[in-house]
Length: 389
Image (cartoon, rainbow, N blue to C red; front, side):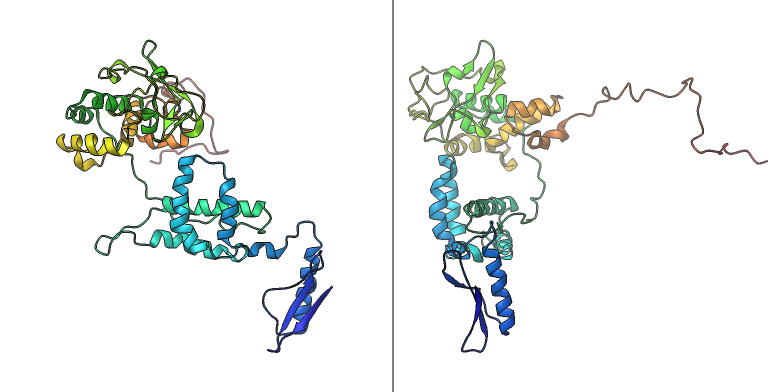
């Protein structure tokens, strides 16, 4: 049953009943009784549909929904720690007290745009977030709303298909062979040089190197199995993208390496026990720390080699590896496999290093000159130009 109520203001409120008998009002008021009644009848009709959702369910705030949604997420511990910081800094202050049903697409778009426009530097040196960073925050928020949609708390996700400006295109930073030789020559410690050589000689990520166990290096056959990864707290039995891979290891990449005794890594393994020690342990044991290595070894060596202005990071040694392969003609598909990329699209940033070749089209584009082939007119009735004297 649908009905109306006249308010002291003279306006009308639309009322109807839910399947359990509860009376409920539509949001807002109406200036005419007929309009209020029509709206109430329409709302009551929706209640009888199979896909109807109780509108009161969406009145739960995002903060309340977060406390339900967050523990149910199956994500890596490091991802959970990182995203918890995003929630605390950017999502909870803006959306915590907002009822789910009242979050609009325009609200979300305005928030995402403001994330990019916000000055996170100083007044004298302004700095802004990259669109990719804002997109990560937006995706996390959208993930929470998608879960709310699945839980039938809202009828649509207002955070999907929000367009943000693309990141400005940038080429990856890499070193030439001469620059790398100059860099490593400024590193005094043999094991530190071994770390750099292995990074640039295999293209593995820092977490893959820090978690690399001795038994995964096969010097006799010349390859390394990239499986164990660490964030400094534990050993995971799979790398990023869960793609275990084997990468060739050339002799020069291990010339400086002194393989330690396999005494155990000292870190908890997510699955099973430690089968051997770390190949590149920290001086005091345990996993090496990338920030410590960068500050103590890489940055001083770059400055000493006159390369301090390049802004090279440890991850750029991975770019260096890929760029050397591409420059020598290794196909992008093979480079993608070696890097552990799930999609060759990620590897295409190295495409401009590939040297153009003609061998694949030489037969199809063989010279037509001197070919004994009768030519046909391409336009019916056309006989060609004649010389006028």
